Length: 276
Image (tube, rainbow, N blue to C red; front, top):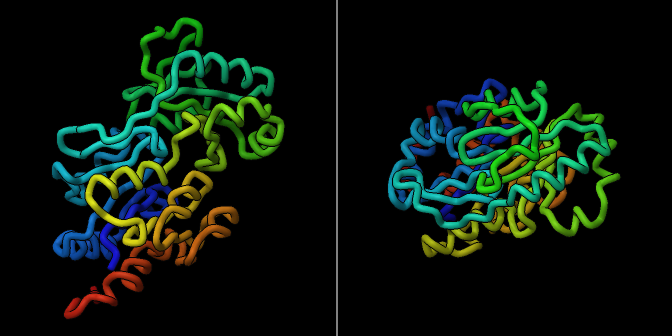
């Protein structure tokens, strides 16, 4: 029996209007009553997740969320940190130098803001989605004590397509590099990914790997899809995510997450009415 379901947000749990379906909401209520854990696993910071955490009622000392693609894992109530692997200001400066060579936009996320040397439409999207402010200023002026969680190349999809093959090997060796969206290429601590984050929560709760379902749609979800006892890719997922999945569900616009819950969890429970 599955005891934990980790779900990516954008392109997975959320439809294209950034909403959770009524069916998913109902199914989550059933799962919570049965003691099955729901974990939101996202590239977003905590501020960008909390409205959905509150909507779903995932507010307890043993409820956890994976943020920044696994760089920070913490409880939803008292913000107790379970796992934390930030970068440093040196990483931001180093990657900024590389971004200038490629002519690509860049920004860095702290635990409360987006830092960028130059405002651009892609950083504005990041700021808007996560409801955090953008601070524009020279990279060299950022205080050395600033907590840099992750750094991102942000640009037109075709531009990032061109840049990715050109990234030097020493950068690839030093950082975990994830394509979280067509306009976002993320750089994190080498040990960081969503699989590590979900694994930390499972261990904390005494849940076995084979009792975990992970659902995602993009390159930054691959590690947790591979980790899970049942790894699921959305119908709208990227080809590399689909390639490692045990099962491919419907798209986020077709309630693919609800389909997985019904097929693999609710159908194995007795006396559950799943019709709405």
